[in-house]
Length: 180
View 1: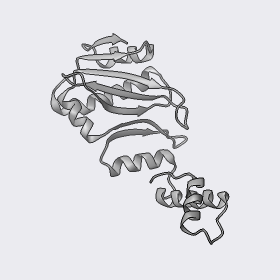
View 2: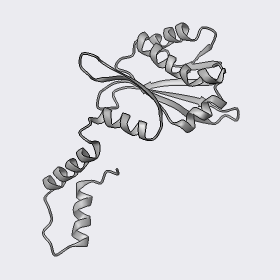
View 3: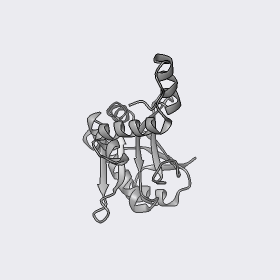
């Protein structure tokens, strides 16, 4: 579903039917919200994201907090990129962004590199916090993608995130680690 700004909806209605009175911006906001809710089937944003991932056949894992019922530790990978990662599992570059989503949770991107130097997105993950335990969960899921192939990783490239470095040492003992 493409988001169209209310002013653009208003302008479009005015161009199509200039003789009719135009709806207020509030009415347009309310109607578009109602349509989004119908499409989402009363799911919140995180639930909708997971539903779309299932529909698009993404490789995905998530956990749910048993007390709050909130979705935590989300991992998603496009099937095409999983296939590419299985073909070129040699280098994984990991980095996170901070406070760029409505939950203010870190989003970690995992990028692979092909032999000709091209990069591709392997997967994205949203964690509740940056902790060794959360990173271990993430790294195990990344490894789960490769388990059936028998191929192992060679090099991880990360920034100086100590919890991530400690998790790498715990999950991938023989894999080299480089700082970027």
